[in-house]
Length: 299
Image 1 (cartoon, rainbow, N blue to C red):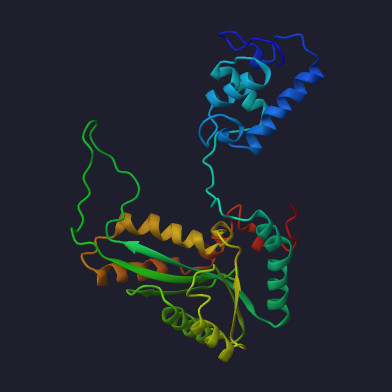
Image 2: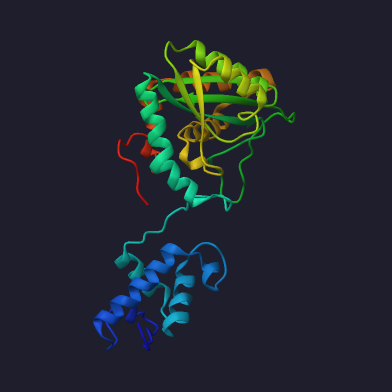
């Protein structure tokens, strides 16, 4: 790339022009590719958080004084094996070192402990559903936005669910806010379904860490043990896929006119999903496959 101009047709981007040493051109391309993979545009003095062809062209111009057309940038991106993708979202507060420790130490230890005591690991999470939630698209006349009729009254319900790689799902739908009392009720129900110990993986919600829940766990130490995911790391929890499925599916179908009907339709969703092959599918996401992997991930 060094010292070259791509021209209007973007020939340099296609590797058809320039007299620089091939090894140098390869090194320059590798540097740009790695910058795109490792940084956001705003990290390197450009604007925005997502890479576009224009911004990658700006990066190349900034580094090597070469101006490429957007089609020319596309040819490089194809050559580098970088397809256009929807990005995953991560909390800025997430600690990568804590995630590494989870993969390499904490999770393998939880799995080994459950295996040793003949227990079972489940991942749990809470989700809220509102009556005014509408997702998806529908067909309509061009220039006229379709209208979705719903109740003018706003109401909501909450649900707690837990899933295991053995294809088991347990859920509880409730109208009140999620508190330590609600968590203890869920733990009571969960313990009643098993004749062996449950190792339950949850996030760091204050209800999970409350004194009331700690006291419950002390009394029921042979029934349930709680384990905590790294902070701000919801992508490590397979039960998040259950939440996403619920939020995506339910608003397309429900016509709930009050909180009771919304709760009934939420319970119906969990009944329909309580099939082993569906539940195991929630463990297939790229960031949760580690649960199925006997070998810890190295970073």
